[in-house]
Length: 146
View (tube, rainbow, N blue to C red):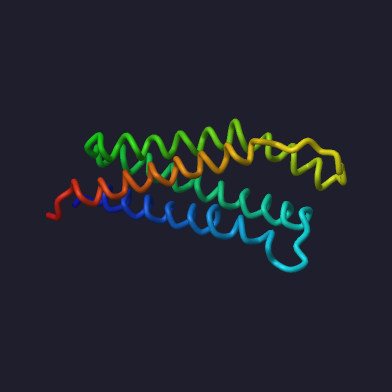
């Protein structure tokens, strides 16, 4: 297994851990903690997702570089690229809508219109997770140890 392939595998599984830990564990349960209001939860969530998305951007850039160097089979390349594109879609199309909604709630606008962007973000998180899993498993099973 070449160095770039090992790097790609490490980045993919690190990214999987980040998505599972933040999006599917931390985000949903923070609102269940005693004393956490919607405003506090949104404030924490905005900070956490800002940092998470920054780290995801770094992982995506590293993965893109590793994939370019490794030139893996399409079974690895396509899902890896899909994960990067899903992240870009989240950041460009969905996050701004979520930010507008959270800004309104944090400003005390009790009549702030509910956003369906949250559902889109969660669906894209699921798609990204599946792409990463497929790419990571394919990278592990299609490359040989030399």
